[in-house]
Image (tube, rainbow, N blue to C red; front, top):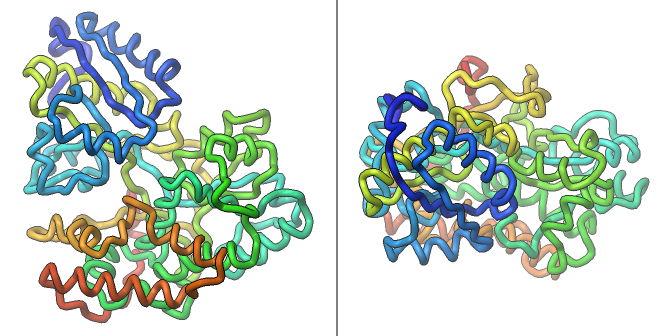
Length: 433
């Protein structure tokens, strides 16, 4: 893929491509424009998009048939060890990483089967006017400060301080994305702290780590700083509510920024801040890949080549990543303007480290066996909301249950967990340095 020259190589190729996507909102707008632009270089390649609303569940089932199309967004349910059964390799990671970033999610045995559509930052999308009207002049940097700010919003405005988007289900996985590097400052926390660490969900007592992330949600719900009934939240409606100032903030990746900006007349009021956790006075934001492009190994050779060209176009020429609230996954790509607030000596952007050689599937195996569904089902965050609403299990009770399930899964996968102290990234090791 890295050797292809767009607009020069394979310009005579003929192919009819089918692209399966989760972005049902872009079918008739952005995607239609990308096709027109791409066909200026490749006039004999037709592309049909198919959008799926309940993407992960529905497409995971469909993927097993083999006859689904040519390009997809690889669902997180696919194990690394199974990638070669469904998708072609774009090339070796060692070669591709010279030009592209964030390849680890779908790389196995040195071969990269998924190319990232964009890089997300982990943080909080919020309405600046709501915060200002509540008397909040600086972004919170600890869970305690955040709770104080939510209370100010409740007391001084008519906005819902924090909107959980619980009813949508998939939105709850956003909380899982904060528990590693964001909550610890440690790029290796997933490998050493979660996969091989002892009791990773326990309260660290210093407002950091996975417990602090989920407890932020628990406290907000239990103190009634969220919507009245989480089961009635409306994902599509929440975009306009944040834009108009009826909601203070939501915990979502940076991909959500343009959707919130375009949902009303107050685009300039939408902003993004790091998760309110600090480690030794520094906030961390993890740069991670969004959905990755996969190409069907059962497609014809011409379709595979045309698909590679289109994926390359999407990554390098279309502008999709920045338009959708992310960053280009190209080595040396600049930070887009809407994320400039993260360029601070008190905020560090890091990339989680890849799994060690020979342990590429360990995290997925433990995650699946534990049935916690981190970054897949949102089960932990859902349990937090349910128990905070009902007054059932405490946050400590939930953490104890998760630790027990995780330890059992570690044992099943040959891991003897050990105590682990996170090692925050130094300034010289942050992303882009």
